[in-house]
Image 1 (cartoon, rainbow, N blue to C red):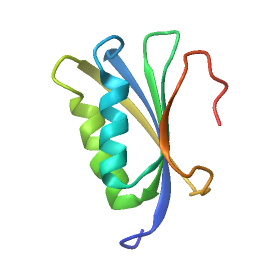
Image 2 (tube, one colour):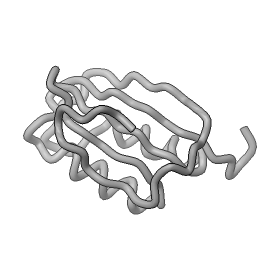
Image 3 (tube, rainbow, N blue to C red):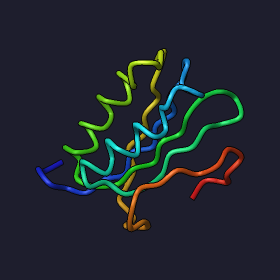
Length: 101
């Protein structure tokens, strides 16, 4: 990919990521980076992140997802890279039990 090329990152974060401010941290990180998309707790205890923007900014978000906020314990981050859709205008939190896009 060339610098500035737009992409979509779908990540599933496993570990102690519920009840520790993980989703709120993701929103802050994504907004600082100018990304769009959403984050949601899953019923199995993981967190799903779907973000779009420049690839280098998504890479920076992915690094933060792997670290997590201080109270979280990130065990694993599965990542998928997809084509940019331009579907969202902002970054937000979705409720558990959402149905994806």
